[in-house]
Image (cartoon, rainbow, N blue to C red; front, side, top):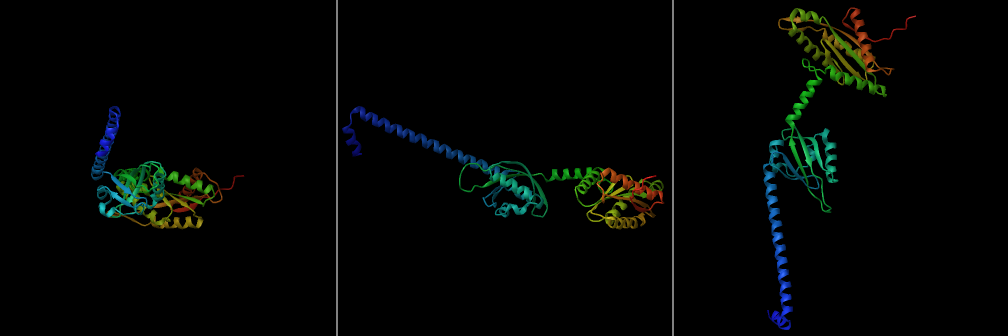
Length: 341
């Protein structure tokens, strides 16, 4: 205080007024900065409280991961979606829960986040605590700023399991026969085309087997369509039991079936045809009666030829009708006739 008195006694009135004005301006500036800092702190607190409220009440899954990929915070919705309590989930390496078929793509997207690119529309299957798989559509904002220190990442996921399963069911219905559950013509023809293209590019031989039931019309006419349906379902089961593991069986329509075989030589197709004939000839129980049908099989393959799918189908069809013309219930490999002279 004495310093101020000494200073004031050495200054003129104008100088003293100027000094007081400068001090007042400094105090006003400090007060303004203090109010601004208090406002910023209040705003940060408000935002933190809002974030906590959203985090605690979010229907969707919110996950905070550290730079090592470990979960450091998770919303309570994790228990409804994945079966884990937040306490159980914290510390998880999220990568360990990703479906093997989705693993590479998911890690690629998470790397994009670290590189500064937002991920806005990704779908990943995560394992539920009970072992089931849940489909999650998720988004993650990119890391921003230029800080050298590691930063956490945030992932927002929405459970779309119900809609995804419904989508898969609709797709299955579109690609499979409603009665037998086998592939239908709409899915078999693209599969045949793709197999032929692989063969033409240097892949393994492709064989096509067409099967037509013998005596099926008599079953329908005598016992009705329900009996016919029972026969078709039993035949489908027996075809699946007789095929090789990698083969594709389809019902093309009516009592016509097909088998697509990749990497099958004449010996392999002959063995399958014989198993099918032996299986089909077994009686089929229907109520108090036993029903019987036969089967004519035509086989064609791409061995040594660069055939189009339509040609392969035509050859198998010709071979099948040769079996029918020769008395039915048998199999035949397509053989080109020598040219007429």
